[in-house]
Image (cartoon, rainbow, N blue to C red; front, side, top):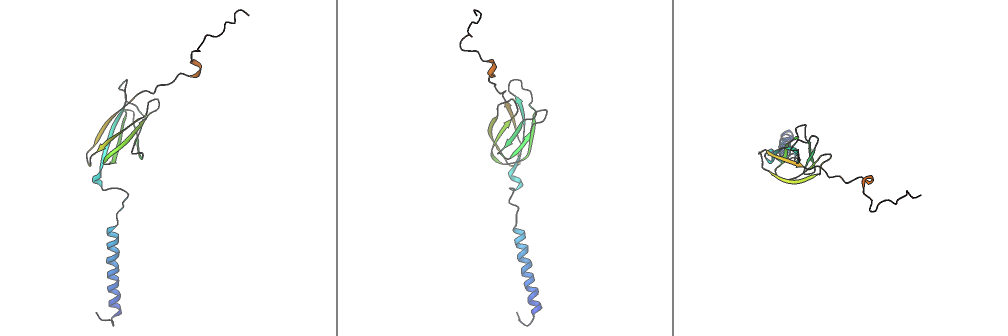
Length: 140
């Protein structure tokens, strides 16, 4: 290459710069999400253990970050959850919280049925039975 052609040198450098930028941008990947093949869908139904009736308004949490709420029929859906093992928690007012785990396979839908038990309530302070009968005040 001859040095007496400065415009040719500039064109050559611009070409290399363009190729370098294209290579850098082409190699960029939004690493926030794994590739699409590593997702699965998760659907389920939340029901009352004793009555087998659906529970509306239950909050289902997968891996502490994904949440869904059950509808009037007790159904919930996650369109995408990461595949592999996952933990989930289900909470509904008046019911005990359930925590469990499952496994999702890439591209395969997963369906679960969650059975919640009514939360046992303790007696209120005004309804306890005294240990000994109250003193008889009728002789006064």
